Image (cartoon, rainbow, N blue to C red; front, side, top):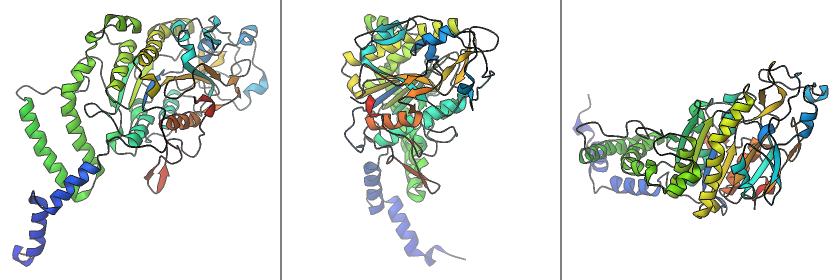
Length: 465
């Protein structure tokens, strides 16, 4: 049987390094933790044109044919079957692809100096048309909501990969010490079909995942102290827990322990910072009116103001989900309501960021996971199915060229025929604006270097100012 005196040197050395506050081990550990803060701001590969991102994710698949991609020929051919060669190899989510064509349900007109054609549904977006770049040639690989949303968010249909926000935070760190670097809000009829995978960190350390804020009650669950616990007692408890966690981190080197330490400290700081952040009653009346926001009443408009407030405070990536765009039926009514909810605040966000000098550093992205079919849904004349072959998104700020329209679809809005932009290309362009070569922003996992763009993607130079 071993006795302590049998191994005096081993126990004395371990005791000295672990327990002595002036010991070499403790000094080295403090220096290591300070020098390797994973959330500290980092330098990208090249000079960036954007340092923050706000992604207005229109979950469900907005109809490009009713909003941004005017197709007079579709109206002319309404009620007829699509050309057979158009459907070769095509797979729809719910409808028989050989269904009759459905003409656009709203009027279009040219707006701004750029002359971009926009639907009557988006008059507020029309007021910023010379500030945005419209991409009419997006394509994706998925035709159902969950895989398509996960692909838009992570670059693959497979669950378990890091999201755009997580890659951004991993590469750049955060400029905010009082708030998470990646914040998520959700509005609309339901939550995102892809669930938490849309803002998950995948195989990256979980400190890089998005933090979902609620718009009523505590922004984050359990942020308030329970009865009988004040700030002084909480601080003492966190200090004790932190010492134990750091001892364990030194022994095993598990990055998830570092995540736990950061999470405890961030939650403590958020208790002081989030009440002020979420209090929209402090916004001037003219700002609330510009967005169409009402303090105390959760809405996409309120979330847009909060997104601006977050980037003002150094938050790196903000994602606003609005899951209401799945118009298999009630195309006219559903789109009218969705645009009523989102058009004004989306445009106001761009205007507000520009007025405050934030737009040049903030890239705003608007769009969903796919488009809608030119063919009618079912036996009605008021619905469209999912469509991955062509859809539209718009971008603004952060080094994006304003007032341009990129890409073109065929006369029915079915396939892209000019300047296709795959989801991987969109991601490569976003990372380029943030200062990264998308092929070099990697993380080694299970013997392979992974990246947001997988093994594809190109920077769409036509979109860059």
